[in-house]
Length: 126
Image: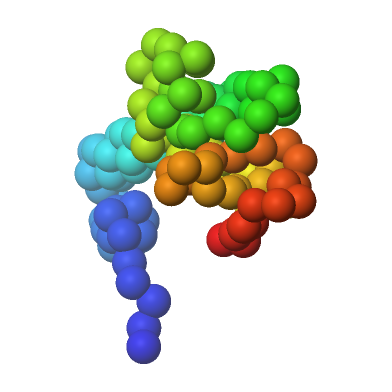
């Protein structure tokens, strides 16, 4: 299977073909620069989102550790506030469970998270 080409690859090929026409080369260089700028901005946005996610993960872990008891995702979301939803909290808590930093348990038929492995409750590994 051949490697899939992207827009930048096609513009590089066009540039090689029209190398003798400086106006076309300048145009192609401009288009390549636009593609590179867009890619750099997207990379920056992804890094920013990742940092925000890391910050939220730290907040979730901190709340669970300081709670001293098993807490549900909704309790954590309510405590953190802002635009933090239960879904965001549950996702981050799931990552922490997989990493072994917190534990998942059931309290009154609801999924809850705790910093210490409960001795008498059923602990689930994801």
